[in-house]
Length: 74
Image (cartoon, rainbow, N blue to C red):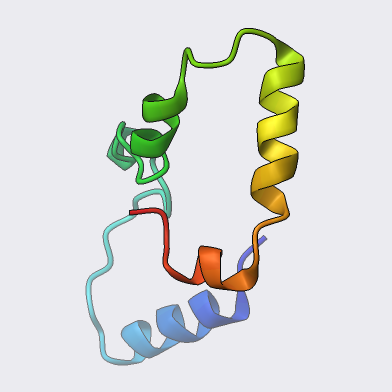
């Protein structure tokens, strides 16, 4: 499925007679292996002794006030 925005861009580039290179819009090979969530996840990995401990931590994390999340993960 092609988005309307992409079609508009392609049409504009065609009207300007720009040469377009064919390539995938998204490539897993270009995704950084250390996505910004990886750091915090690595910091807490291994501290849970059971699935229940992890579930409790996630529930507690989700109950934080909006201000907690407004500061970001770093």
